Amino acid sequence: MMRARGGKLFWTALGGATLIATGAAQAQTAPAPTQSETSDQDLKVTGQRLPAAEAPRSSTCEVLSRDPFLRASGMASRAYLPTRPTRNPDYSAPPIVPAGSPLPDLSKSRFGVRDVTDGDVATTLGPSALDDTAADGGAAASLDQNSLASAIGACRGAYARGLGDTGASGGNTGAIAANSGVSETGAPMADPAWRVSAANNRQIEARSFIASRDTSLPMGFALFDQGRYGEALDWFRKAASKLQMREGGDEAALFVGKITLQGLGDKSDPVEGVKWLKKVATAPFNPQNETPMFDPRQPDRNTAVGEAAVILANVYSTGFGAVGKDPAEARKWYDRAGDVGHIPAMKRLGDIYYEGVDTPRDVAKAVGYYKRAAKLDHPGAQVALADILWDGEDGVPQDRKAALGWYQAAARNGNAGALYALARAYDLGEEVKADPELAMGFYKTAALGGNAAAKVAMGTYFYEGKLVPRDLAIARKWFEAGAAGDDPDGMFNLAAMLAKGEGGDKDVGKALALLRRAALQGHKTAPRAIAALQKKAN
Image 1 (spheres, rainbow, N blue to C red):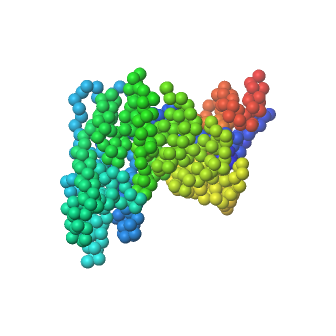
Image 2 (cartoon, rainbow, N blue to C red):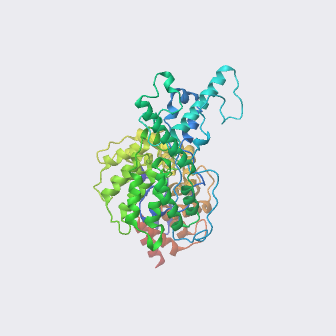
Image 3 (tube, one colour):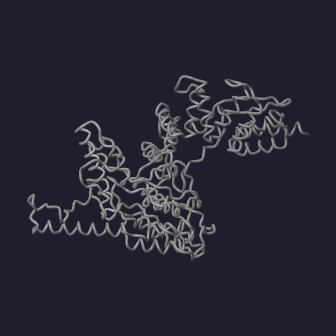
């Protein structure tokens, strides 16, 4: 497979023995680790926090509405939900604000809320309030502005909190407003169906009012961000008891689950946490207009439903506290996460079946999951699929042209592994016309993106002096970077230079240590090099 291959080669002589320092072209490497290895650390990834108020659910629909074609075709209304980074702090860290401090002040913005009760939703024709400039171009432009305002109003109405579930058409509930005047168009106000619709609409408006005035959910997040998890839990429980799933109740229940799972120190209750997470993960989902936005450069952004499913999958993958390991249950929840639009979960299922993690290895099934994620622009899945197609494997026929296409797709999103694969193709003239300069450009971009094998290839260029002036000091730095990334060729090449004192000080002891590391990773030439160095030392 492409992942087990490399790019360039050079050799050096050491005394009577020959050290073959292999660079990118003859790599004897183990398969590169996947992007979504699972461990208990997956349950508490630290770093990013959400802003004080998340994007409104209607935001993507509104953006798409600005495209005249999408607006005219009605495709904008079939929008995606915005995603957000996951809040997963280090629960063992001291709180930013001590527990028992005064409650934080809340901003005027609310979690994912548009206050429909105060006329925030545009329901009348006229120039869009979102545009600072008046429409130019006469009547046609004015009509376009009017349609934009209407489309934005429809977006906000369809995604307003309190509207509950949406129908298969992707619109709102279709209830008739009590003051709509619909009786003038033939539906008498005394008609039972009209009265039911009017009552439903009053309920919707009441739910919207409750949701838009809620302070329990934003207070929960404010306390959570201060590290006051026990206090935040009380507010999240309040929010979960009063808000329906599409009103923010999904987020409230998610954080009750997360805090209960592991956020209360020795008082954490994983079993209770799992119950809350399952409640969220099984919430109703309408793919028509609730499929989340996917950004290939930020693949781990998620929704409450998807995040709950992924956490459950991670819990069952390894076991967590009183919750035992259950690989079949883990796969079920990864599948659920994929079904509600979390693309990395599809990639992870592909990894599980490709590697045979707690299940029989099934390359064909892995390819199926990789293809699903790859078609939705997941770079890691595109590379994994291309790696298999490059040489073919276990019933999956070789298709290098298709593989090259998937590498190119992943490279467009800056995937360093894909850039390295393209570099090799142009370096060795595989499926494309050889182009050394283009290959070096891809190697450099991949190296700067963190690919260890590409760093080794860059070191080879400077060691050989091809396309760039020969510079042993720079070559040694690139090999050091590759070795630091656990690339066996980087370790071997750095050892060769250390053993001879090329590009810096001589250090036979360090060279031997690096060769032993390379040998443990399966580098075929390292054992002979170790023997040669030891013989010379004696």
